[in-house]
Amino acid sequence: MGAAGTVTGSKFLVNDKGTRILVDCGMFQGFKDLRELNWQDFPFDTRDINAVVLTHAHLDHCGALPLLVKRGFKGPIYCTHPTLELTQIILMDSAKIQEEDADYANRKGFSKHRPALPLYTTEDVERTLPMLKPIDLHTPFQIGSLTIEFFSSGHILGAASASVSNGVKKIHFSGDLGRYSDPLMPEPEALSKTNYVVMESTYGDRDHSNVSSKEVLKNCILEIAKSRGVLLIPSFAVGRAQNLLFEITELKRNGEVPAQIPVYFNSPMGHEVAKLYEEYHGFHRLGSGQFAEIMSEVHTVKTAEDSKALNDDKSGPKIIIAASGMLTGGRVLHHVKALAPDSRNMILLAGFQTPGTRGHSLLTGSKEIKIHGLYVDINCKVVSSDSFSAHADRSELLRWLKSGPQAPERVFLVHGESQSADELRKRINRDLNWDVVVPRMNQIIATN
Image (cartoon, rainbow, N blue to C red; front, side):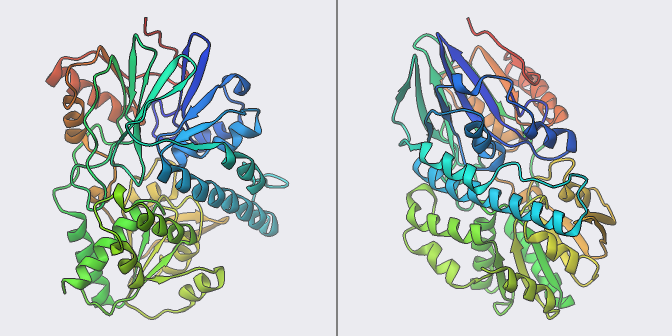
């Protein structure tokens, strides 16, 4: 029901003998025609869904849960312990941003809608959160006729793959797969024995750069140290921001960049997430207390007034990390308005940029982007790198597929743009000679 021919909006409906579960319930992002899908009714009766199985807490996987509840779903939402806590933070933040953006649009009068409305509200989120139920990794649980089990996928804190079995056939949903050399997250667990694999293909058509994320950061920081400008890094508040803070701190401690350059972390949500890295240190590579030490060396920007003061302060060099990673909303937009027209500054795009987002416009060389109804000149340097990606690249996706004990009957490639998924399909056919399908949106597939 989503993430077919596109990266966002993950939703997979599994039906077996009257048991109906939804694997992920994500928000569509990117082009307007995709975003408008969020406002449409679900292509199924929400009241007939027994449960949701949530792989991880990114918005393109969990962001439509309040809509599901708003439209009649009353069942449990199963996920790992860290995913539960992250989802609480992310959904509440999403609702607040939508409410703030709608209010700003109404006050400034630049929206075509009268009045502009949020997709869902904080009250909708508050009705959703009690339905989240934590499950440990490697602990099978039952939903009707189906047995579910979570395995670590290494993507972000608590991210999991989900195995779904009716006792005869088994489907393994990869969720989003992490890197085998991520600085903080463990590598993805091997694929279990299964009949079918539903696998992401975000980077299915290419491998990531051989230049490490730390080296990219080092070069950017040294450049703004010379220009005495600002390095602005739009970042996902979960996963990407924590990796950036870790590697910047490492560069400073090792004397590879000037230790006196201040780092401002402008994401109240990201600050809450950082606390969870300390609480759930068993889910990443650092030990107890180590992430708290990193945060002690960072300036956390908590209030909107402090955020505005950062824009008013023209002194440099300094580093600002702010959400959202694709420039779809949040405080980072105000930083772009203030900093992008100045050639001393730099914007580092450190994550996947979905087509149709402002981040993608910067990635493809746009010299102006529209923010809050006005066009902003892009005179600063824009640097992009896929070295920061938390998604497995083509070689790593193939490595994960081959990690299973035997070939599955069929592989379905989802969560990728059409070209990316089709290129990966061709590579799997060529290298492994497996049966591979790139499903269409709302396609129904029978497994018997």
